Image (cartoon, rainbow, N blue to C red):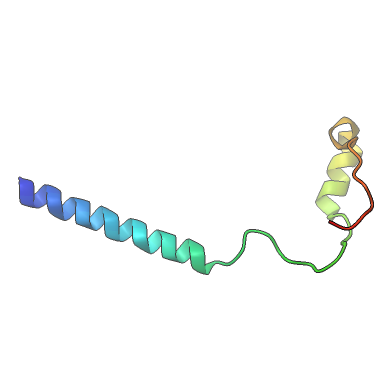
Length: 63
């Protein structure tokens, strides 16, 4: 019983390490653009349908 539990724990740890490695290799979560970009088409259409969700304004200065 203890050997089976130990093997299952080892298998679970190996699986988790593999998943972490794959996520790390995927790259950064956000794309680096280098400068200001245009608004995505989907966001524009969303704001046309539900304008109260997009009423926040941000300054036009560089980050």
